Structure formats: structure tokens, C-alpha cells
Amino acid sequence: MRTLSKTLFAAALACAASPALAQKAPASAAAVTPTASDIRCMLAMGAIASNPNSRQAATLGAYYFQGRISARAPTLDLPSAMKAEVARLDQATMQNEAKRCVALVNQASQTMQTVQAAFAKPVAVPPTGAAPAAPTPK
Image (tube, rainbow, N blue to C red; front, side):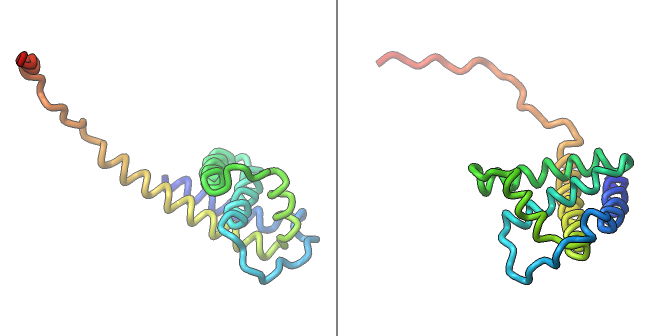
């Protein structure tokens, strides 16, 4: 999974230099909601996925953030929300968002590695004994 981290980080830096973001107006200093924050991460993962070397890692990141969004706002019109959010981003903001989002994906990846390691050894199943006794009639 370290490859995932390095790949996402390198791609995050590359997407931050994207010419598509160069002409955007500066993002407002207003607080960003948790859902908008995750939408920004989906946008960052989409930009990172444009690099063929990072596509798989970024796709996993996009699924991660989409899951967070759907859990928090199940009725959200995601395409419209993404279009509205991308209009608020400039290149510097996108670069910062990409770094933040890559860190979140890496943290989730490390958590999954810990869980996976906990199950690396076979789970002990209790031995089967005699069949349970039949209930006694009253």
C-alpha cells in the first residue's frame, strides 16, 4: 500500500498544476461543509485518475469518498453538487485539497491493512461437539 501512497501523492501534485484549474476564481474563505469537503476529494481523485500511473489508486479513493458522501447525504444530486463545487476551486485550493484527500485515503488504507493483519491467521472455529440435547417435554 505504500505504492498507493506514493502514487496518489505524485498524482496529486500533478493534478494541482492542471490548466483546467488555472482560470478559476479564488475559492471563498467560507467554511466548507463535510459533504462539500468530500466532494472536493472526489474531484481531486478524478484529476489524479487522469494520470494512467495513478488511475487505479485514485479510483479507489473516489469510491471511498463517494461512500462517505452517500452515507452522509443519500439523496444528494452528486453530479450537480460536483459541478457547483468545482466552480469554487482555484489551482492553489485544488492542490491543497488533493494533498488533504490523499492523506485521508492513506489513513483509511492503513486502517484496512491493520484490519487485514488481524485476520492474517485463520480464525479459530470452536470444535463441533455433540448435537444439542433435545428439549425435554413437560
